[in-house]
Image (tube, rainbow, N blue to C red; front, top):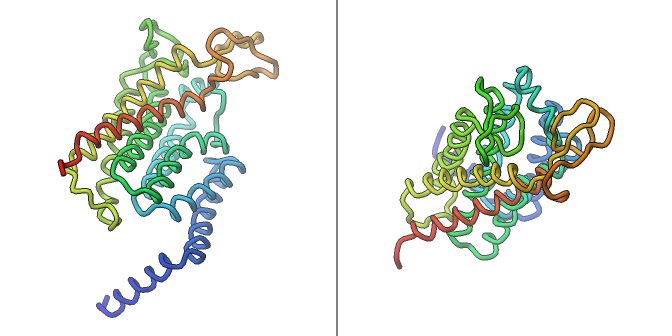
Length: 296
């Protein structure tokens, strides 16, 4: 490709970025296509596809390659694991306990990406590296939790409750396995590596921070978020029992009948647990960023 053609493409891209209306249209079209494709693949429900389209467009408008790229990295990787393992019996058995299974709905989309979007908006108004580190922590946590859930369900050993360490059935909230924990760590590190690859594409991010600190912040915050998610699931998350089949579940309905609450707060469902754990991971990510920032 000649330099003249490359330069013309750069100018065309700058024209899109400098035109808010054109950027908004391109962002909505691109995010809409991704959301529609995910809906067709049953990765998202109809409400989830609409939420993903709006959220994706907002990330493009307010952030840059890192912000939108990490959102896509989380979505594509989590969808890949979910699709790859969907037909496995042990995973199907575990999903019977979940409040929601199958495609993600709008509430799940906002629970996973809403806090990151808030940080993205704040960064657009008040650019600061700590907001980026907080975002890394949030995305690493939701990715770690998703990888742990999807891959951990295939563990050949029974999970153990994080509190009390007793063996329980797969899919029980607050339970962990070695496979799931390893997957959580890998999912968190994946976000850190993706951030390192995306940051050179974003000229606004030049914080002079060592790459190891970026990857380390994502890994540490993501793992901490996954642990917090399990602790909340084992202690305060609402867990119910089906009166028909006797299964412990996160859902208020099972086998077509109302379930009976066994423990936990009624309002502390899985989406609230995920959001709370993400907040903690964001704070940890920002804290690590504060330590990693060069002294002025």
